[in-house]
Image (cartoon, rainbow, N blue to C red):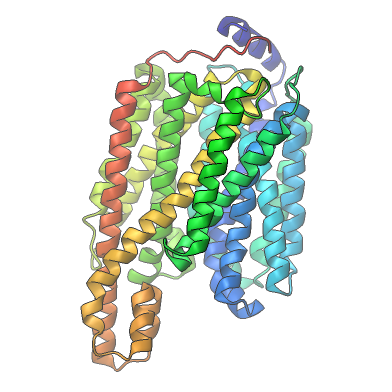
Length: 517
């Protein structure tokens, strides 16, 4: 179908649906609940350890079970949405997420909670790609940037809002409230999607490629598992090495199979479009840097600057404000100067802010931190929604679910790698800086302090005042030094991507012609 015919069809479909902006609100809430859940859990882990008697391994799997099922099932969820109905599958995902959240809130053992976290990941695997893939059937190309900005902002804002919400809930209510709070939000999203969102799917679905689907799930799951195990066991551990190598081999087999199959599980030929390819690249690189930085930023705000979970959430508000401001500015910039300029400018602004953040020290006041967070938010707010608009604008209408899922799966892998890789850089710098200051400590205390900044503060709490002050100061300084190195690496990666986008992303983005719609 030509671009003009597709635009006409969307405009006709949109007519008479004044409630589509209310429908958009339901979709935004769907993405928000997934974003919230990620950082709410990180903040709640110490409480879960004490209330459920969870071991370190249990805590790892409470988080990893969700990440594994989310990453492994994104592609099948997108394909099923295109095949059986994106609205229908989004409702299934929301229901799974909501029901498993309620059950998780009543768990009495770590095993029960891990199982429910896995089910929550399955629900999220449907919510994440399908909440975006519905938008092209609801909004015209002129309206779509605003709709995507709102949806992307909702999903992203859940990340910094998580600690704020978790701090309040854990202070005033039982630990299960951090999961139970999902229920009313999911009910609102379910009702909005059910009554207001139109159904959309491929009217002539191809035969289902079971082999490709199994290869995709197995490859992504193995790769994500290997990377998840790295922070605990190190890059040379057999679980890490086998997981990463097996995942890479299986995914290579998937690509070979997919490109040769007459009815592929996911149409990888879409990467022949420069617009789709470079927009996906920007999306993936931003995920690598952003999630790695968010993972490292939280301990800085909580431990180095001495904030509790609720105060940490409050101090992330400049980031939220920056994202909202950037999303609005990005739409204007893309409309006036083009999407290529908007994406490269947003990434360049983010890189500049990351470089500025690298100059922040352990004794820095909050004002420079707030300024850096705000500018990072502005850059992300400009770049990410515009990138998503390019991706959705290039995909054939029959493949918006699978195409969105593919880019999200790549970003999920990149984000997991970002946390592991940037965490390794941080740990290397931290240990090198703090080791000389721990020589006088007993071996057990020394190893605990070397393991993490939280361990160093825990050890220092049992030391005499002069030594305690010295260890805390050394730990804070070492962590900040490691964080600075991470910020510089992330800034370099984001800046390189901004330059590549400015050179290679086409100034005119053409939709991929997939024949019939």
